[in-house]
Length: 140
Image 1 (cartoon, helix red, strand yellow):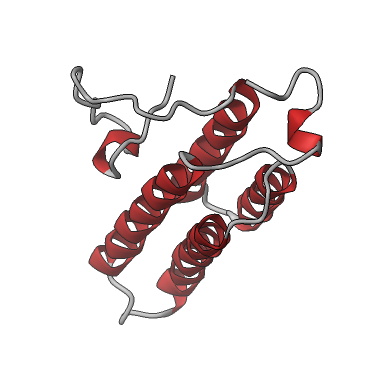
Image 2 (image 1 turned 90 degrees about the vertical axis):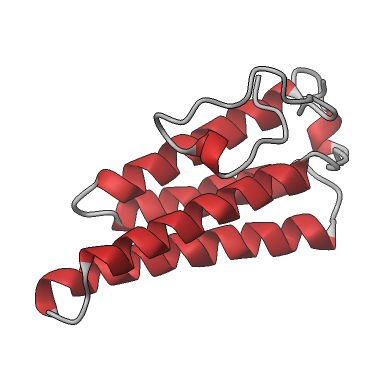
């Protein structure tokens, strides 16, 4: 189960600390949807053509938000996550056409995306399900 993890814990090949606290585990539905977002972020980093993946990230974030009571911190973190994903895809699109776009610039955007993903995960720790999120099979 994913807990309130740091950006490093969400990067491939970086194991979370074994003794990290699990103060607010997510409901199974949110856990599954966050896992999908996480997988899509990893795919966006490696996919040569990431526009479909970027669209899917937006769709899954929307599904998460549809299950929750409105919360400005969660909305802000969701916006930040999508903006970071868009920024990564944008720079990846420009890289083949511009010598000014370096691999280091792409890596910086990827790091920013992982920080945004961690921020989104952290914001979900205080999420409260709305009526749709409390439907049978969705609540914790």
